[in-house]
Amino acid sequence: MPLRVELVSPERVAYSGVAKTVIARVANGDIAFQPGHIPFIGTLQTHPVRLVLEDGGEVRIAVHQGFVEVSNDAVTILSDVCELPEQIDVARAEAARDRAEAALRADADDVDAKAALRRAEVRLETAAA
Image 1 (spheres, rainbow, N blue to C red):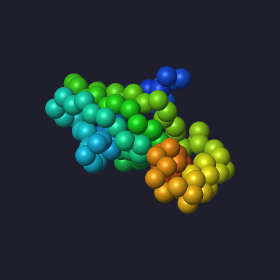
Image 2: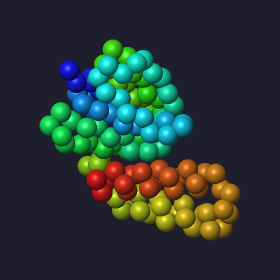
Image 3: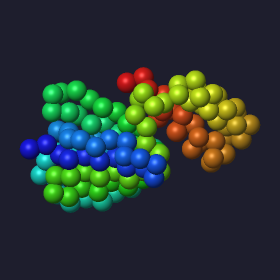
């Protein structure tokens, strides 16, 4: 029996379907959820979430922080922003990466620039998958 999966942002449901495995990055590393997983609640990092489908295919979704909850073979991901590859504007993400890198050259400790760089990198990685 597959997992029921929902990725939700304030604007929309980015994904609703089933998957064999869901792989996400939480505070202490990557975690994989499969049917029968024990209940879990965690804080997500800015990182692509990978959905391994029953046919062996894979869907990657850019997730910019949030929460994951697993219970009764259902995985729910709540995120401020989650984007499928076809929704990502690659040119805009590249420009954001360039701006963040320039800001970090000026101030290597700029926390906002570090976060912006990570978001841009995740978007680009997801779009390339």
